[in-house]
Amino acid sequence: MQAFTKTTGVAAVLNKDNIDTDQIIAKQFLKKTEKTGFGKHLFHDWRFLADGSENPDFELNRPEYKGARVLITGDNFGCGSSREHAPWALVDYGFKTIVATSYADIFFNNCFKNGILPIIASFEDRDRLAAEVLASPGVSFTVDLLTQKLTTPGGIELAFEVDPMRKEKLVHGLDDIDWTLTKNELITAFEAKQKAAQPWLYR
Image 1: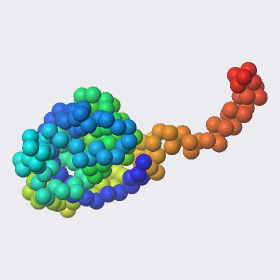
Image 2 (image 1 turned 135 degrees about the vertical axis):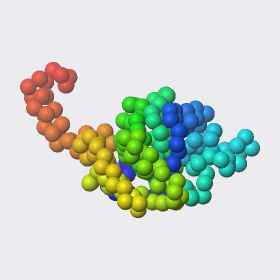
Image 3 (image 1 turned 180 degrees about the horizontal axis):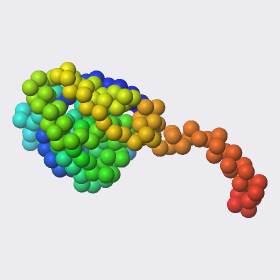
């Protein structure tokens, strides 16, 4: 997993509530277990018309939002099924940070496991950020995980909360397995001690 400490990039607004995981990555694209290659299918039913061309009315198809790294969106983002392909698609597309007023629990947890920082903002703060983007399309926001602040050229400074363990994993680019392996010496020592005291467990 790629480490996350600080990122500056174009912010895009997708002002919808209850965006479910089937809209993030539709079921017909869940055909492989590798984490790459899903970005081209992100928001497929909204991004593309029936003939396969880009939908000019969809927000993320605006030229000012190309290469966006920060997504400002609505309430209950990532609801629906628990598919981990949803954060995979967002990462593969290029997003590093999502700002929403709330998330579905499983999606929220999966973001941290795949290198995305999901920020929970108040409705007022979310609306302020969205207003700045809409007033200056193509504007870039800076997200600093170490200081836990999102800043904008317009002067907004949003402090956000993040669980210390999740922060540590993101900063060092560790998923759950990688983090466990950092404790390998302790695990090996425990197993040796247990094997000496309870050898029958290892037969």
